[in-house]
Length: 261
Ligand SMILES: [Zn+2]
Image 1 (cartoon, helix red, strand yellow):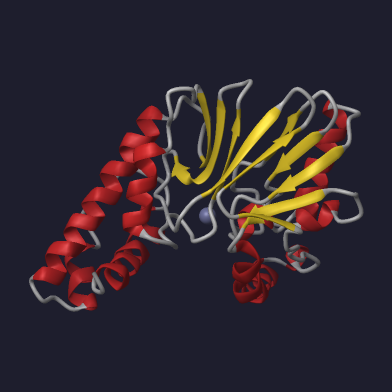
Image 2: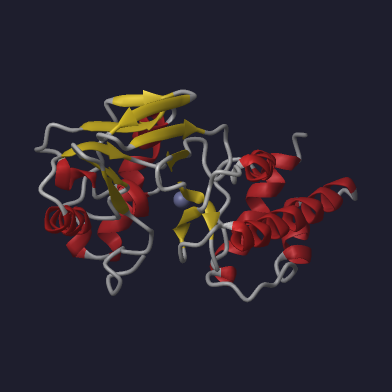
């Protein structure tokens, strides 16, 4: 996120049914949310009925305030309200530091939460929302559009960019085993291009597996966290965006999880 990209780094969008529209993620700022609201209005005259947050990260759901005046159902994972309460003020400070343009942003907790699955219908357009056990974060929600065979995977899948671990490495690897059911034909990742998801998933699983195995081996050999980081920070080198920014943090996150196993 930077002032130059206006915080617009994640895939955000909407799905239109015969009666209404579900907006899925709203971007980093109120301005980005407003731009998305204009994009919805230019595509359809049907009202927005649902505002869905895929998880707590500010590049995904901090544009929600742009829709606050509408009579919408705001939906998120069961753990999202707590995550927003814990992290929200810090994220707002971070955003204000990146750019003064971001400083009028606010976060909006959901008024409906999903513990397991929830079905909503936009009018001949059923969507299945699924709350996942800890994986990318502890509040990941995916959306499956049955008619289109489209899975909105959000940050359970990064395409061409290094995934960032903020939940559970073992949980994420388990989620990837069942993410792509046979009826999924299109996948919207949290970052990167839309595809059938297969190649992106294999790449991500290979990276996370190698991260897991490298950290597990270091712990078994008695290495502490800084020795593990020194050993692994140039391992798993991939031609992916954001490797330098995120890989070291992933090693640390994996270590703090796996040392308790
Ligand atoms: Zn994320």
